[in-house]
Amino acid sequence: MTFQVGDHVVYPSQGAGVVQEITTREILGERHEYLKIVFVRGNMEILVPLSKGREVGLRHTVGPDELAQLESALADGDLSLPQQWPPRYRAEQEILAAGHAYQLARLVGVLAKRDLEKGLAATEREVMESAKMLLASEFAVVGDTDLATAEARLASLLRERVG
Image 1 (cartoon, rainbow, N blue to C red):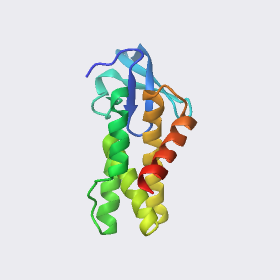
Image 2 (cartoon, rainbow, N blue to C red):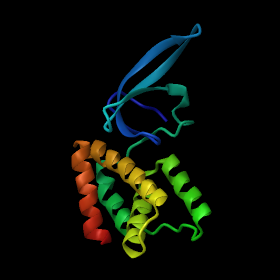
Image 3 (cartoon, rainbow, N blue to C red):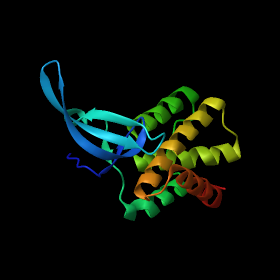
Image 4 (cartoon, helix red, strand yellow):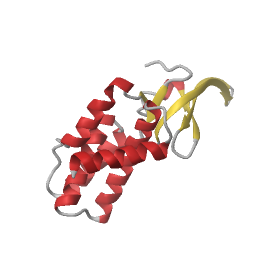
C-alpha cells in the first residue's frame, strides 16, 4: 500500500487524517521514512514508519462516492454480535481496533438501535461513542469539513434512519 502527501488516511486508534509530509529521520544510525499525519480530531500529528503502515492498520479512507453506502450501513445496522456480554464486548473492541468504516457504521447502527430498545450499559455506551468519533472523523476528512459538522451529520443520520 502506498501513501502520498495529501492522501486521506485512517489510523485505527486515532481516526482519519491527512498525510502532511513524508519525512526521513535518523534513529540509532539508521535512516527511516515516516508519514506525518495530521488528524482532524484534536489537530494531533503523529509520525508513522512508512514500512509499518500496513502492520499498524493504516488505510486510505473511503472515497467521497462511498459516503452514501456508509450511511446505508449505519441505517441497516446488520451486524451480528454475540448476545452474551463478554464475547459481545470483545467483538465490539475488535471492530474499534480494526477501524474499518463499514464495520464501524454497522456497529454504531446496531448499538443505537439497542439503546432505543433496551438502553446501553455505560461500557457499551463508551464503545458506541468511540465508534461514532472514529466514523465522524472519516466523514470529516472525506467530506472536507470540520469534525463538529461531521458529528452533527452523523447525529442527524442516526435520528433519521435509526430512530
